Image 1: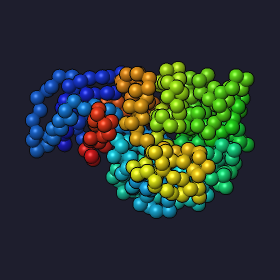
Image 2: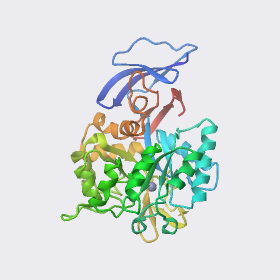
Image 3: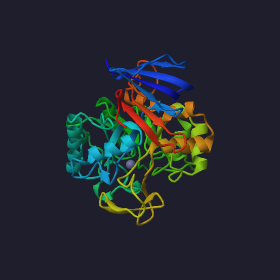
Image 4: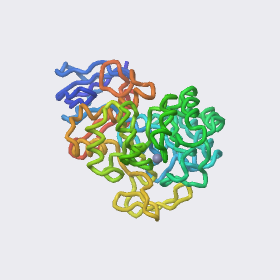
Length: 386
Ligand SMILES: [Zn+2]
């Protein structure tokens, strides 16, 4: 069996910070993680990779990302998902949920078809086991950069039609919309994670959906009701209810440093998930302009904004997000790293295979240069892809 031995690794995995480590990969799996240096020689079946003290972490899992390298998953172009997946892989993302915008039903089905084609091609870059629908069942008053023209009421029929083409793993919707509470239950029955997002809900609007199993919040704090002392809104709900899995965009633009500090020091780290919410302008230079769901967006100073000034999404890379939170909070990497993969893996049902650098886990690994915080190598299913 093909074997890869990574030596001189600084392993950062949930509750593990181990320098000078050796990782043995056999086939797709991690066979051994050792603090000592067992003797290994390169031969016909064994490749030795010396990472010279760089961090080796679980490959990142990004459950909310629209695009990269000028491509958007919703483009009417079957090549788009390949390019987005290639961009994500360069960021050290080994599993992602390509995320749709609030667009027409036909466009959503077409995007799902393109995901199916990517899967049929063997997913040559980051793996996309399912998709995330951001909308279209959101609150028209909380669209952010989503096009209000395509907002509609929750429809299980529409969800089923899309999921028939390619698995839908998550749907972000406004719980306060008509039928919103029941919709959470219907999603769970279909194996879809219901998530409250782009929402004007009050706490009392959330609770029926919560009782029906909803445990996820889309880009926590962004496009949801803020905390007020007589109505704590969705931001308050995120602090009050521990087991809500809150997505956080850690680019220091979507949330200020103090809010990042509040979230990462006051909420249980078991229920925080870092996301990028990256757009097609991710990996692009300042000045790049594009149309998103029919709305013009411009990239300036690394910020993607609509003409009206609203933030449209990010250009963030997962590794940079991790660094930002580490810098802002001082929380050790071995504690924070569960927010870049393992929490996501647990919620989406892959917790026994993904999200840890540990014996028996799938060898999805990212090697991070501690100076640049960019990946210098990426392994997917035991194969070095970068
Ligand atoms: Zn988004």
